[in-house]
Length: 172
View (tube, rainbow, N blue to C red):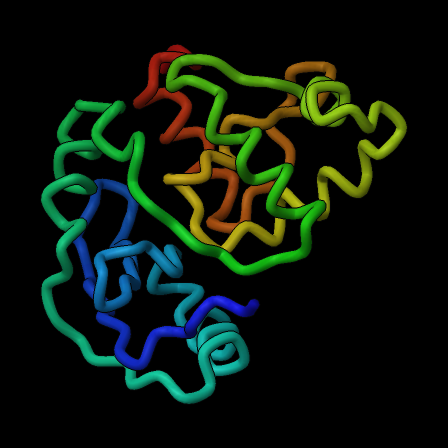
């Protein structure tokens, strides 16, 4: 049985210290996409492919207070937000496992691959991590290189650095 796709999506533009966040929710308040305004064309294209029959309306969404609280310093404010990013079974497993990394901690790609029981799938884990459409809530920014380096982040390394500093992982 296939899950019903939403008919209406709300796009909320939330100002943050690192740019305007784009938060897309469905009628039930489930997060369907998260990105930044400098990546809006790519996000809209992804939404069009994933939800071809949905109407995308701009307005304040139900998750705004949670994101505002996160950026104000309550780094646990986005924990437990319901999300649906689509994806393959493998991607979903990676994304669900990312949600177990607490704020203030990081894992390497190798550690993430080991945790999902696929220790040789480091590259596949990296690709799944990079295709996460609901960033921040599914905290792909908490995955770093085995040597501690800040490797790729879809929103830009400057945002990854800020998020990790905000969560207390990196010193300023």
